[in-house]
Image 1 (cartoon, rainbow, N blue to C red):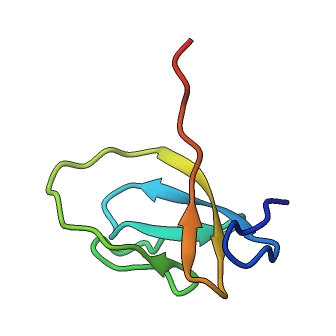
Image 2: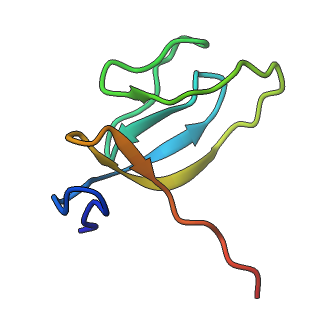
Image 3: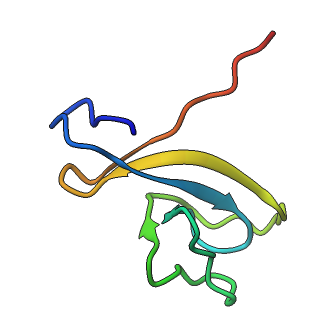
Length: 79
């Protein structure tokens, strides 16, 4: 588990899907809403802006701290 860098509590593991829904963090095992432009019930909406271009199937692993309301995602390093 990842510890929050602000409060040191354990963060929840999940992901950020890259589909047609609003940018949101979802817990592992939960799926985005079936409705485009709608956040899932379990989702944590992130600050974002609408883009009409769709990219299906990608997701970024990320952790969420419910106390601090922060999402942390690692970046891909170049070889």
